Length: 345
Image (tube, rainbow, N blue to C red; front, side, top):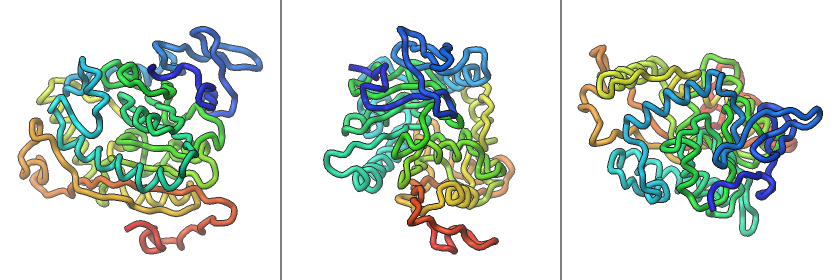
């Protein structure tokens, strides 16, 4: 079997993005009840809630072109089934080694203690890419939604056909989630939050507010494998370097994104605490890595084109727990960082 087309099969409900209005399927059409109207279509097992005339589908096409030019696709289903623990393509072994460690930590340190024997979690994989994480989590018995705007068969949701596990694949934005309020237990941003998060937006922007909306009390927002910087200028330089490398090496124009392209750690921790009202912790942290095949020299990577050293990206698994009525954590005093008030370092 591949990704299930009907969320009800897994006890899940899809809604009009950003609302609690439930959706249902009639053939290939996705309908909104009361009054009934079509809001999407099921394409090859994917619930597609985006209009092809919108900006996001055009962005996803440009993004898919970049990813495919980088070699992030395969004709072999086994390639997708081995991820993240083995990169059969050999294109990004260091990157997938980091993803493997992060995924093991996610399962052992976050999900297993939450679930317990015989109690599967409802999990949103936000920015699911080729669905490897959704498939792995579903194989462990969890009820999983894989969400992305990229529907490409090589590196997007349509790659679900390579996975035998049952999960729901839905095309919708990360800042307007097609799930009801308190509808899931965990929202995982796997190497994806930096595409939509903005440090200068109130509470980090709508994406964190939406994640909080769909989480049940005591639920978790988990941020995995996005580049973290304490110095925002270094993050901006990293993004510029990456864009320049894509133009020079692959001859492709990087698609514009709504987020910063990196996570400013102090801002993110403050915003997560504001949104969830709960506790924060860092499960794992490690420095950035690069593919041996495509990496630049150490000097160029650390110094960059400006000739001034910049901070190297860090990658961490950050867990924010939604407070219940009884354990809500008061905000830190003005001018106090989360770390100074008992948060993560």
